Length: 422
Image (cartoon, rainbow, N blue to C red; front, side, top):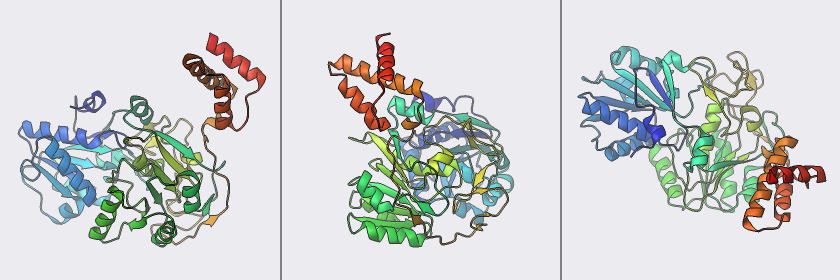
């Protein structure tokens, strides 16, 4: 049975709708239900994706919805459709990971091969690195389901916990070596570490293997080899994966607890896709740990920030964002034109070995931005919990020191007590 927020965008569905739902909140379930309703109405749905892993997931979701792939619903990769003639009878195009849909291959599929089919897109992040808005792919309306913050509060996702340096670092800099950060903050957890190029990912995997079972995966890796590695990780035989250009989409192992950002990201969408790998709940899991070695969350925000979505311009915006700002996907520097002034990136990935600074990584990074009002309110809640459970107040004061790095002032404690009693 679908959850209320999953049903909401299905009602009143129109041609050109783009459904936005955070990673881990059941986007594929919504897609399968829409396909089922199209089939029940006598239509033929064609689900399209760009990765093998996504196609397998979609087929499984269709079976769960009592649909038979290739009999009454079709599942194809964009690579297959690009070379094949149009399939007769298709009445609906369902585009998974639709933020790729503004690409040229997707546009030809929409305008030349299936111009009369209804279009419905699905994504957690309606934003592209090249700055093209989703409206250019034929989408007319955004339908949202639930925010990350709401999903965490409802227990559908675990809370993201960010550990990062005190500032955003310059392009090509890391606060710590990925292995050192893992051993200090996440030892023994299942982790995915994202790197800027294949050579660095392989080198990092070799270093990790000196301490834990680890392997590297990348986009151009032979598919059967990549699948074998991912299956070992899913079974728990590997603890760490180092990744380049994969695992940001269509890879779901809920037991994964730690995301290591050993590279910058050009858009908030790419950051959210990477971090979303660790937010799915699993038995005994209480958080999704983000080790932000570049401080990129200072620039692009944290995973549960409040955002709005747009079909034109920058697709995901926080209230403080400048609409026109983009970031280079290689070095993370702000980009105004087509080429990055910092590293020269204009399409081809360049090897850029990071400089490890050995900086401290801050736990409770977001909490420490609180002003006095927020700190008093937080301490008041902790004091109330202690009172309700019969604990001494000192427990709340120690918790405050752990979060903010210092003891609360006498004035702040008095203020918090008054809020608690009120």
